[in-house]
Amino acid sequence: MQHWLIKSEPDVFSIRDLAKSPRKTTHWEGVRNYQARNFLRAMKQGDRALFYHSNADPPGVAGVVEVVREAYPDPTAWDKKSDYHDPKASPENPVWSMVDVKLMQVFHREVPLDELRGVKALAGMELLRRGSRLSVTPVTAAEFRMIEHLAAQRS
Image (cartoon, rainbow, N blue to C red; front, side):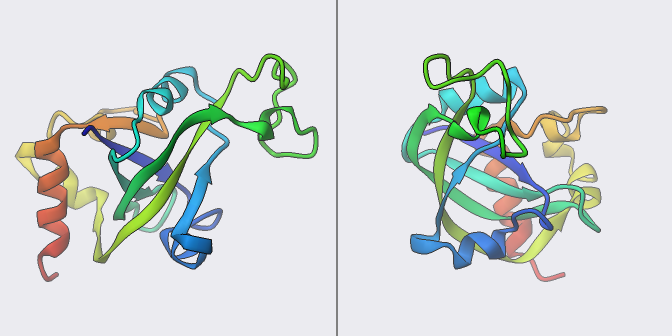
């Protein structure tokens, strides 16, 4: 099993929105960066991901999801009405991929970005690199466990 971090802006789709979704499952669509897309394509059923609220006040890790369907074509790419439309994409040339994720846990407290930055064991995380803007990144098993540990602590 691999571990990941996936980002979403909570005013667009939050972990609470996922909790209200049918079967607590959703498509992780709209990724329009080739490296992030390749990470989506590397995800396997059963992999776990940290659900990160980006562009929030404060940004932070809100919970855990599980990949329940591996990568498949993202039809929002060829939907001209979609915010994620890409004129280069089509059903014959899908270009972009998505996965389905299911909510496993909402942390009783979000672990804010500033707190993550202060943890030496997390210093190598892609999320904490200067200028990292990727919406999907790999996370080591140790980093994943450390963040779960931080989330379990009382603030």
